[in-house]
Image 1: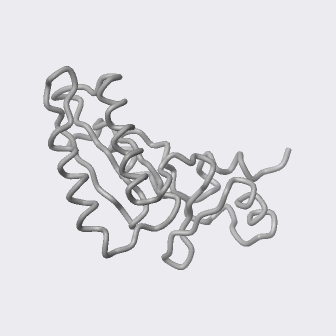
Image 2: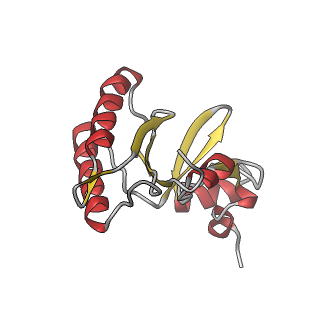
Length: 156
C-alpha cells in the first residue's frame, strides 16, 4: 500500500489472548475483503498488532472511504469488541512500551506515573492518532517527549 494509505488505529482495553489471534485475524481479513464504499470495493487491510491494536487501512488512491463506509467499519469494530469483551473506543487510556511489553493507563494515572518518574520523556508511547501509512511507519511508536502525550503530563 502507498505511503498516503489512510489508517485507523483502535486500541483494545486489554490484551487479546494469543489463542484468539487466528480467529480475530480471520474476521478482520474477511471484513477488509468485503468493505465497500458506494458499491466500490475498497483496497483495504486489517490486522491486530501486539495483541492489542486493531489497524484498518484503505488505499484511497483506488477508492476512497466514504462517511457511510467509515460508519460501517465503526459498527464492525463495536461488534467485534462486544464479542471479544474489549473496548476499542476508550481514547483516554494511553499505551507505552515497558521492557518490551505494552502497558496501559488512564490519562490521569499516566500523568501520575510521569510525575513519579516511572515513565519519562524517553518512554516509547503509541501514537494512535497517526492517520496514514507513512506516519504510521515512522511515528506510531515514539518517545513521549516527541508526542502529543507530552501535553497530557506536563504541568503549566
